[in-house]
Length: 394
Image (cartoon, rainbow, N blue to C red):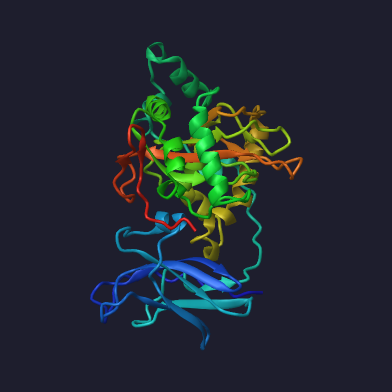
């Protein structure tokens, strides 16, 4: 049996560095470890991080790279946080790794970490164990208990009642085709960019996702201007099983959030369509801290969303069955758009024919004044808003 050590406390003091160093381990794999760090060494150079297995040093690197989207979400100091990656030549397994700053020996949050951790068996949990009902005064107006439905537009009423909105043939062909051509020219494969913000590098992506009528529709539904901050660009199903997006967000966001599915071509029913549960946005909201509290300590940092999936999916499936809830699939035509609520249960289904492409752009948005850790939102030329996240495309 592995002796999983408890995570050390987040240390923010150093006797040697003028800026208190701190950071986090976000990924551990057989041949590498990744994370982010904030601060400088006493000589003013970027912080150096060391990985050890007992007395054996596996490698070291300085934190100089741009943050990934996950690291960006976790970081406490966006302006100065930098990423590091340490790679060793031979795969390792079943080791407890200590990750520390080279100069001070201070451990990073998430250290020590076990490499090759045994699979965990999630506890048998109900949806209620992982969720709560937010107060009316913290959610968007259309989500509140008291709402004058007679004053709503048709789309607002649909959103309030079912938690999604389908807009047929909504996107102009020139925007759709321009992005699809650029996507294939820059990345000629079905799997998308690892970067979460290709809109920062591909003008056609930004133009598509900040299309002015789309921005206006999002504001109509959420009641505040919405800023783009995430793209999913694969042309195959994510196969991410049942979940709500809101459990991945800071709890303070409270559904001032929406996601958009844009069809770049006609979608075949066997390609793994987007599937959702109408009305499930009115169910309680799953909370990240409730979920992480039921996970082993060594899985609560960095890649916790992936590790949480067995727990989340099982609870969602039980709740769908308990409520005898209807599920639907979005079999879109080119230019169609589906907007969904942050609390709507949804998934990317497994394709019945894996050779089929599912050409789509998926974009996620948050209210521009409710993401204090993001850079200040900017408005695209003649269109919607986006957060200028600094992250490399490749």
